[in-house]
Length: 433
Image (cartoon, rainbow, N blue to C red; front, top):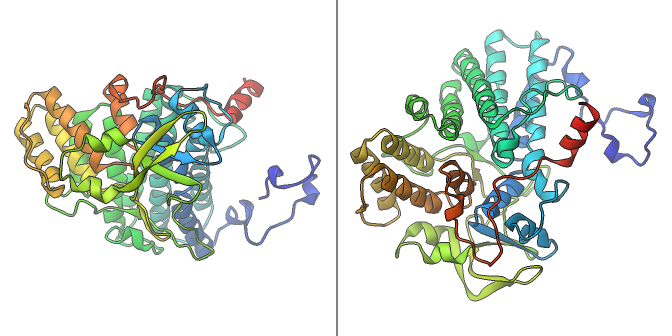
């Protein structure tokens, strides 16, 4: 339906709201939705999963002092997110939380629609449900990463009666439950999905192969729970392949030709995403990951609005309008496998897996200590370069209580532990105690 924010009057009567053919109402799919409508909901779910991606990756990259956004029209990327001024809970960067509300809402609409349709079989319904809950769990995990100890609301099935936010631990458990429910639904969905998936999901187009994506996201959550027994049980259920393509995994598709949208992570004349220079300088000589992710500039790029900082390295992870963006890659799974091995005291296996990633980057084998702490530090370093600009550094250092070890490139900068709860959330709770 229409939102009040898109209208010029504060006094909109119910009789004034008309159906917009480009944006069907929720009601139209909650009255015995047709298969075509359910297919559209599934594709819409995949599309809305991309919402907030640019803001999220750039916010968490900035918070972890991995990348900086030299934005010529907005200095708060460099000041507020780096602790040089107080965080504003109504600023644009709160999109790192709020933009993921739409895929969660979309999933809830899909799930409600499936409960009251006779257009598809129960087995087919499970395919739509499993897809919806997988993307719902992923969106909730993104929200929780930036909200951290604020927690998130686990139930917004009725957006006018949302549950209260719960603790970080309870939030992680609730997200795991959503993903587990999706996995169970996928298990009962028959061999094939009743709808087509975009090319970014090549290799994951059956319900069984798509379930490996669901389990990979659940595995990421298990790491955040610090539950390595659970992680070890989940690992073989994912698409993890220690000898496979490290780039394998599901990807968000983009297309610059309308009605789709172009990759939102491209550098532009007003938005230049640079790498924090010391991270690149600290990389081992010949690390192919660096060459693949940043491009050294002839002259350093400088930023001078509210803070002064220069970097010679412009990110080059995304260079084309149609470039896909990975959701989770096999390289992350290999490094998670190494982390599980290190945590379980299997130094030989942890070292073997670290070396797979190092060899792919053109580096020699790991020669450091093989104590648990030394191996974890090594894995965190490999994750920094392997998963650069993929949204992990800040979360990784926080879960190991190492935020204080993050390099601060400018005097006075701080590493924030989380963002503030968005103003709309605060206002809602104040009005609905």
